[in-house]
Image (tube, rainbow, N blue to C red):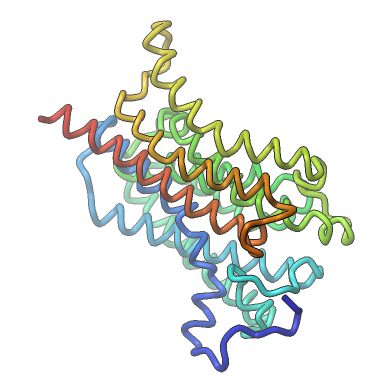
Length: 317
């Protein structure tokens, strides 16, 4: 799609800022919060606090939106994002200037940081550490992405740290369990970013920006995407079976996590898109693979959370 294409005529101010936040990507950060909260109640024995849950979820939305906006500003200013796609933000569409979005991102980071500090003050000191690491990664994400560390950044922020923080909010204490059990979901968050970077290998390379996809090349990116797509199923099955077979220190995942296999057809459809990237069934199949991967991540996260809740019903029933 050409650079000067603008999607809608005279969108409202509200729509401009909603698009600037790129809401399609928000499940990547909010699902670990939902999952970590469910784990805290069912596995950690915490008394569920709806107010703290909604507060923590809203804080994550604000911080993720800020990170999205800052990333869009960076990409636009460095010439990395000039073509409009269905998942583009407001800067590349010409709806808001990069300065406006930068100021908006700064305000959201400030509000999110203040909100996180208040939650930490009310719940547990360990949340200051988890939240501080997450905030730092979010603020410097664009620099990390340019140095092929973007995958690791989203793995932390929109996976492990989100679940760990949600656990602390409900229980008041730190645990490694939500971090370990969120690894499969966090891998799918990497897959979302990788699909975006894989599509942009050529344009990123022209501007000397090296992502993991750029280092791997096209064929290597396909293999990496496959590991990120199907690895979560294998890891969940290992977390279910290995502790039961070996009697090791790691707590076994409940058998209900076998439900995540219901997300396998979605993964297979995405794999088909990736394999057919040179000759897609639909013209935009590979272009919007990141958005489609985000939907799969939501499916996997919802099924994983349902597995936790079902375990709770079985335990308390």
